[in-house]
Image 1 (cartoon, chains in turn yellow, blue):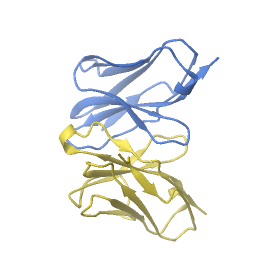
Image 2: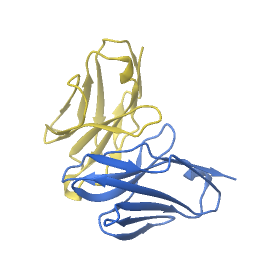
Image 3: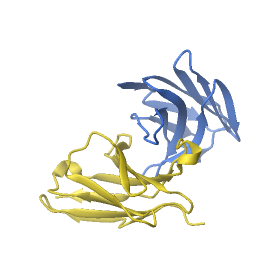
Image 4: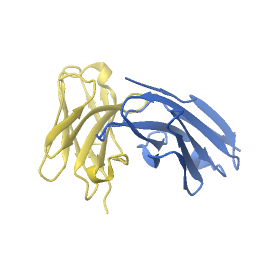
Length: 114
Length: 110
């Protein structure tokens, strides 16, 4: 049973560029959440997708957008990259039926913006 | 709004017992989760308390007191591999959003 997978594992971009990160949820999960984790901090909630719709959103600017596909996989897009966007981006999947208190995280994509 | 308090660092020796406390203030509280994260790794779910009391999972136990807005994670028979960051994560409302604090870094020494 494959867990949550993310790609790429590492990425280097320059300021102003755009980036797309990808996530495949754990088998049987239909809800995908994205988190940003800066060094020394806890993960910060970006947004959550369910049934191909953004269901909840954290305190992130519109430069951060996402998409969920019919197979439940998801993409996170960040436009006009800033140096401060350098972080570990984590994807987590869950099922609404469990109440969502258990989320399974992928290994993350480490983004460096130069 | 929400506030979370956990100690930033805890150090203990191998084989000992350690308790990581968590106090929270949050609206629409549903329950309290605990996650473990090793350096460079992904957070891993440890336990969830929806009701008051103790939940035991192997060497780890988690406790919740809703009236005191307080919980703790108890780790027994500490092993070196338990060195990691531990996050208490209140669940708010009916959604799946998790709000992490800065967590507690546990260092297990010989």
